[in-house]
Amino acid sequence: MSLPACPKCGSEYTYEDGAMFVCPECAHEWPQQAAAVADEAARVWRDAHGNVLVDGDSVTLIKDLKLKGSSTVIKVGTKVRNIRLIDGDHDIDCKIDGIGAMQLKTEFVKKA
Ligand SMILES: [Zn+2]
Image 1 (tube, rainbow, N blue to C red):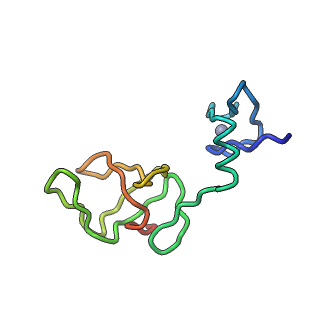
Image 2: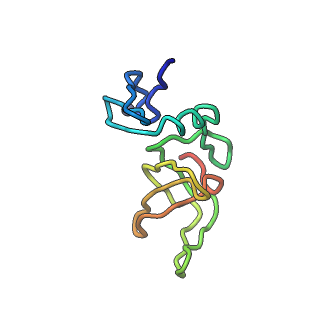
């Protein structure tokens, strides 16, 4: 059986530790079960125009977004640096200058 490459850093030196895979290079650990599923689905995040997004990208908002539970509106064109892609309804984890940590949807951003 061949071991999957580390989903975080791409290292091929992955080893098994019980029910987990472990990457010796970045210390990332993940369950073997999930890895098999993720491998098949190999999720790709895309912005509103279909460009592939990766961790650390900068994006700009393509529409005004109202911040839940407040009157703050994040304006279209706001630049968001160093995004982190996550699984979920809101699939971008990021920090916006002057607002703080929040989550966005890839469909409302474009790659900067
Ligand atoms: Zn790694």
